[in-house]
Image 1 (tube, rainbow, N blue to C red):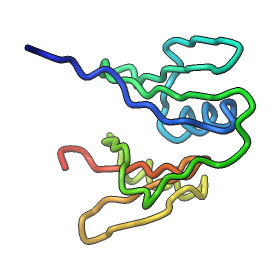
Image 2 (image 1 turned 120 degrees about the horizontal axis):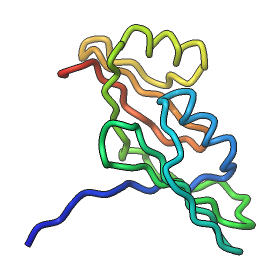
Image 3 (image 1 turned 120 degrees about the vertical axis):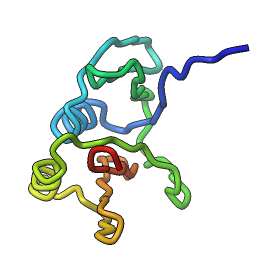
Length: 121
């Protein structure tokens, strides 16, 4: 039996703010959208792989999501690591740097951490 990895989901409080963040910080683009009375799903892609990030916005949700210890994260390879680091520093979204390992993490508007790796880490 075979399975194909399709997407990861995160829930967001402000869909437009999150879309702007992911487009600016990671150059992710909207691939498709599903809207209902109760929720909106927006799938983002990087234009290179088939894997997508699904943002879920729930109608009426006002309380921040409980991310626990925030030990789960997404990871992205930056083709130009130095330029990416400069962009993320300018955006003020770098939340942790591990200079020994040569990686860093950024934080999205809802508090999710995203690992940024240099090519061929």
